[in-house]
Each structure stands twice: as structure tokens, then as C-alpha cells.
Image (cartoon, rainbow, N blue to C red):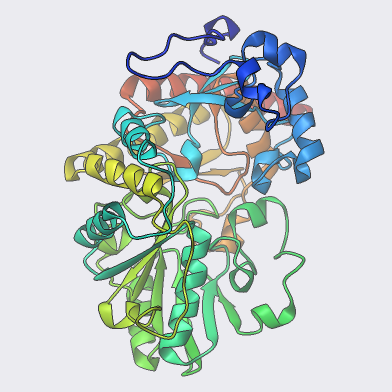
Length: 482
């Protein structure tokens, strides 16, 4: 950790000139619409509608309270720390490359909201855009100029996306892309790849990576056999032979949910050729790779053009969003022009589009090159630190994505999901806990990527490297003790 509870913000702050003062706890609860917090919260000046844990500065206590209100205490399964042990920190605020928990501990953050944050937490351009947008209203259920501008901004950077439809999440994007492909082709079958995670979509959860792999699940309960009856799972990095019953092949062009696994030479090109041969559509899930590998995403880096592209994460600047894009003749099958239904009250939300436009405005070609350099810097220094400590770990780099593979017996290279699962999850868990003690937050799962952004300066990366060597020695000692 790089600071202590004495650095936590005071319970009261002066209002910005020209703005209304922040409501007091008493004022916020006087209406009776918000249940009052404990007396300690009121005494600390914690506003229930803007709670940051001032009155209950304890991760453990707040997480226990969350478990009574939320299944497992979390709203996304991996956050519960089940695979790495211990209980999660509860975040109060974040800035730049750091997050700070309710106890006032600040960590150097390599999670970055699982890739949604690329220019740093609370970046001034993004917070200003969101604040200004909020002042005009948070949702209209009607067209807005910004949704048009964001669609144009995506199309400009990704030429295959002649039309773009905005929605609310990466999961909605992938599920809509499958529905669209089926509607366009009149076929039902879909091919996906083992270890590729495309969100919580019934037809695509089978043999997904990321949280599914971390929790040790082959899929999930609650998905009927009929939902996956037309889903074919193939090994990643192998081009399957398709039939004319296949509507689409969906793929992470760089697998980023089973570690970080690059496509082997000819894989993506082979998928394009095979889809063309049988008249199937090729879908790139660029929810993670979009705008991280190159200004135009993985399809620019590898010079392979998909029929449909799925986006999320970066295009919302940290707010919930998703999108799909593709050629006009494909996208125009969506309602209201075509027979493939899609709708959503919050699609094109004015806050998310403001944040998305602000972040894309920051991602120039020079910034993209800088992000690649920082990822290589991180991987090289962490690799050297682990080697110095005698901790077996490899750090794979693709663009600005960094993956970690732990254990002497891990496959080298990792080409598919079977190889990915040779990583030593116990070793990763020990390393994760030791890094957290050193003030560096990694994702609480062995199959997630490390995310580097503009806030990870050389000074920050060097601090992470120093922490890595200390943590690796602790992890080695823990593993030797058994």
C-alpha cells in the first residue's frame, strides 16, 4: 500500500464555487426515501445516496453487510475473491493509476475496471464530460446528438463498421450480434472457441474463460440444453471446418479471458476464408481488444476484416455501454429497418456517450504507441522481478494487454484453453495476495489480463516492479510451506 488512513478525505469538503453545497446526512435522510445509515455514518458526514464508507471504514464489515443484501456480496462473481482467498477490498474512490479502499489504503491498480479504464481513473476530461452531460439529464428515451457522434467516432476508427448500434453492455453486444447473424443468414448454428468469454449470454457460456474458468465451472446452471444445442465449441487457434448450417463464428481475435493468448499465424485469416466459403458471418468480439491493440482494434493489427464487431469497455470511458458495428447491408437487418429486433431504454445513454466521446478523443495514434511501450515495460520488469525472486511466471504481451502464466509446469507457449489451464492457480493466488499486501491490485483470478493505461507512468511501473520482487519472494516462501 502506498498511503494510510490518514490520507483519507475529510468528511466534509467545501463546495465548488457556483455549485450547490453537498447535502448533509440529516438532509438526505429527512425525506424518508433513503433508509438512514448507522449513527456512525451520520456522525462521519456520510451521505447515504453518495456513500463511500466514511462511517464504516472496514472492508470486512461492509462486505459482510453486502453479503446480507447481495448474493455472494458482489454483483460480478469474480469480485468475491473465491479463487484467491480472503475477502475483497471495498473501493471508496480512484484516481489515475490508483484505487483507495474504505479503510484508506491506496493500491496501484492493474485491474482498471477490467479494461474499461484506459486513460486513468477519474480522468479530468471524462469526469468533466459526464458532469456536464448529467446537468442536462441522465436519460431521455429519445435520440441524442452524442449517440450519433459516438457511432461516427467508432466508424471513423474501424472502417468495417459502416453502421453502429449502441447498447448497454458487452454481453448485450455479443448476444445481439448472434441474433443478427442468425437473422441475416437464416441459419441457427454458431461456432465459438473454448476459453473465449463473450459475456453472460446463454448460448455462449459453454466452455467460457475468465470468470467461468476461475470459478471452475464448465458452463453454468440455469442454461437449458436447447439454448446451447446449436453452439459448437472448437479449440482456439484451430480453424474449424464449417458446414452450410453455420450462421456465424464468434471469436476473441486475441483471447484475453484465458490469460492473454495471441492468434497463431493464419488463424484469423483462416476463419475469414472458411466463413466466406460457406456463407457464414465472422464476428470479432473486440470488447477487450477494441482500441487497445491499435487505433482500429485487433482487425487493424492483424488486417482481417470481420462482418460484425462487438464493442464495450473502452467506448464508455468507465460507464456501462456496448455496441455492434458492421457493413450497412448487415446492420440494416436490425429493427426498425429490418426484421431482427433490438431495443433498449438506456441504449445510447447520454452520460455513457459523453464519456465515450471524451475517452476516444484522448486515444490518438501516438497514445496508442505509448500504451504498447508501457505494456512491454510492465511485462519485462515484472518478469525480471519474478525471476530474481525464483518465482516461476511468464508475462505475455499483445498490444497493451499483459497476461501472466504461473508455474514451472505451465505450457509454453499457450495456444488454447487446455494450455491456459496448465497455469498454477495456487501459485497465482499466493502471488495475488502478496502483491495486494505490497499495494498492487491484480485481478482476483488467474485467467484475467493485466491492464495498462495512460496513468501508468514510468514511475508507477517501476514501483510495481519493486513490489513484484518483494511479493514474489513472499509467494515462493508460502508455496514452499505448503
